[in-house]
Length: 416
Length: 88
Image 1 (cartoon, rainbow over the protein chains, first blue to last red):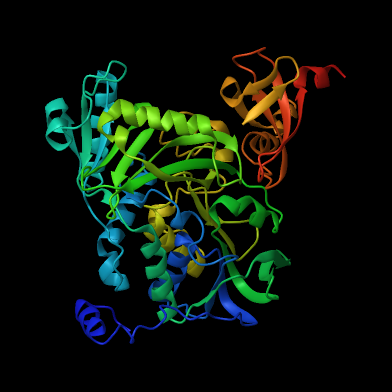
Image 2 (tube, each protein chain N blue to C red):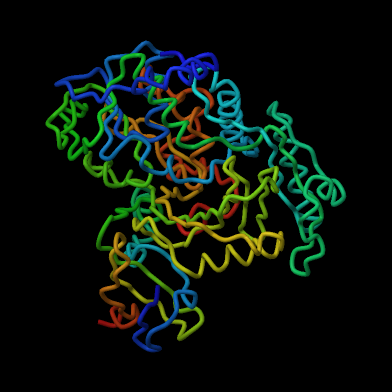
């Protein structure tokens, strides 16, 4: 079924009885050409592009819960391409271009909204660094505008510009940055993959990876063994557990990142605003809730819930930046399990087992990467060679020193 | 979260700096192969469940603590002084 405005109107006239499920509830077959472990954003996008770009349709996505039940369903939905380092820059640029064509490609409204992202700076040194970053973004073919204080005031008049600790000097505006509806991204990719024949298998937890003579031959699951010559691990915060089934120890530590949403308000924040010095960023969802977050809780955890000190810190930073939000009531908060890599950049690579591929290490920035991650992981799985824009996301870069340390803080687990 | 420091007693999480897994206590020899150093510095078991990691009591007694805890429930089983273990 093709979705369209006409379809919405005709269904509305006839009691909405013609809508069909967006994907089949597939049962596992005994064998596939390729298996993707993990039915989140990255896994579903990988399946979609394997089918669409590479013609592989005898494939399955195995998900231990329901589709989109992990970080794709619980993030702060920011889409941007404001990276600096070669390796990251071209990858996120590619991802943003895919975002811009995603709704037409998927025939699914992911509510991608390019409302503009503003990163604030608070010192002369930080202005220089942001000017340099903006130039790198422009050189990559994306957009960036350096705003002085009055320029920021035109966009964001409600900020407290004269705060004593971090007075606002200006901001870097990324007009093509914005947000999207996170669940719809998962559902759109799921529907697109399903329509191309991919089996999306839910409630199917992988319990073992079968390897023979250095090659992957299949997986063991709670719904029986499944054979496949190619297996992709795309499981974010649980990467260490799944990779351990193939005898690997990954450069990954799983941490909590909290996020918050308020009750619905009338439109008041029209951009995505990030306040790096205070570890705070905010946007307003289409439902009206203020969606905001801060930094990691900074200790390894799988609890999917955080601690009060970081809640307090995020609220303080928000009040420092924009005192007007003080009367808004927080509706809920939650914590996601982040697969943190030592240098803060991801891994899309082969492993020591032939036919076994890895896509992980998305830290706290996986959402905007979903289209390009799926695109590049599909390329890697189909051709056994890295895609050009993801060629530096190597698993061995920590040993060789070819780091992608965007923050410049060092290659150490507790620094990103 | 609160940690029961063996020297200072029950203290708020904000008094502590988190370093990471207690793998850091098993430092390779200076002449160990690069792969051993790579493994030591970067690769992690990253358990979902019982773990043991290092916390520094920065705003207290300035001791390194080895904390045994559950990463799924946040339950804390034991807090030991690293210095005491080292002295054994």
